[in-house]
Image (cartoon, rainbow, N blue to C red; front, side, top):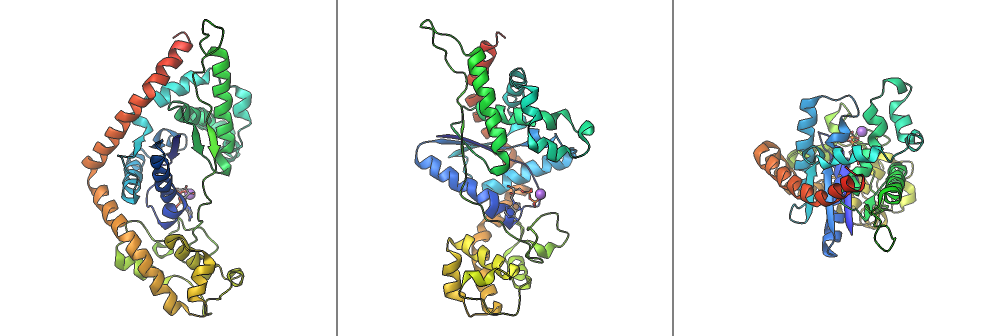
Length: 341
Ligand code: ADP
Ligand code: NA
């Protein structure tokens, strides 16, 4: 298995990012490494310029996301971790694939329609050709599998269409008449359902960095006292916890806190309620706080340390990029050759 997965560099990382995204990468890495496969994880900084952005913020967010991934357990000894901008082969292969991708294919991409909104004429060309860069991202490493959520399925289909057409149009013909494919067709795999973590101030809103209330989320940089304080102040209700998960349906804040307890401990909601059913939040919140403090203590310590150690972060990213460039070189050379370049 060769897995390629990218993540948008964003800042102010929180518990939602950890349980909903980052932790899945760490699990994937460990499973793939155990079977002798290889994960390529990249920070999608080249993708980020498809939308209006601030250069200094992009650089800071790229470093911050790298620091978070490393702090949470992405291990450079097991996975190749890098940012796209340091591996020119991504942009090069995108251009080479632009000759194969069809306008009609890109015109059908629903994400472009969603992201460009009513201002289609004002959208960047990069936003339109973004899926071709995504195709380059995975084809470059001959990915066998790409983890995709529902919203990315269409882009992976496009990557397969591009690879198939390229192989068909340009795959070198052998003396016996058979064609050698230049690209592996990547298979999608749907990662295990990720937790969706809600705000501590409003159980019907997603926990998000854009919420102006600091108390609405646990940041990965929060120290243990802050974590405990935020859990204790989290919005809840006056009822004791039920024993039946169905009775949480109309209690979004309680449901969220129980779900977080389950996600952090690997226990089912039934199991958590089996222990805490009948108890009030005066008992449940300190228990949840302890779980979070213990799990996040090493992560936040390493995260804060790495964020401050820019030279070390840059060194780790440069090492990852060098490995990625090596891995990409053969495919890139074969692509130029196949095209007569
Ligand atoms: P934010 O919503 O804070 O702006 P991003 O949109 O930058 O976060 O999300 C980065 C990654 O983290 C995405 O994969 C997203 O699905 C995941 N994520 C963000 N917030 C949550 C959340 N509250 N629960 C689960 N996953 C989340
Ligand atoms: Na967002």
